Length: 110
Image (cartoon, rainbow, N blue to C red; front, side, top):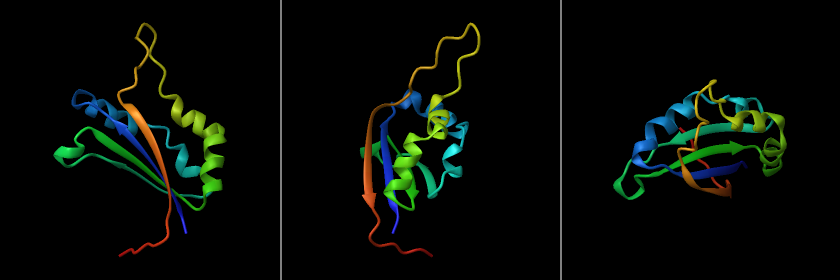
């Protein structure tokens, strides 16, 4: 079965639009990685989790995920777009990142 990695990132209300825009413009390198199966950016939809986004990736194996972490593609995908000349460096929008890892032991799909 697959290996799932969830990055839980706290984003204050005033940073939500910027956070989502940055993900929309991301490099997209993860999709080219061996063993990559899926990516989803989950926006909070209820009051209790109003400031916590989940970045969900699914891999064929833990070793595929670990290889991605060590790759140049990972570095490129997480480098962000450099600031334009005369522009202040881009600050992180989210804080409190927590990485959760799971083995899929059961799955049902439509």
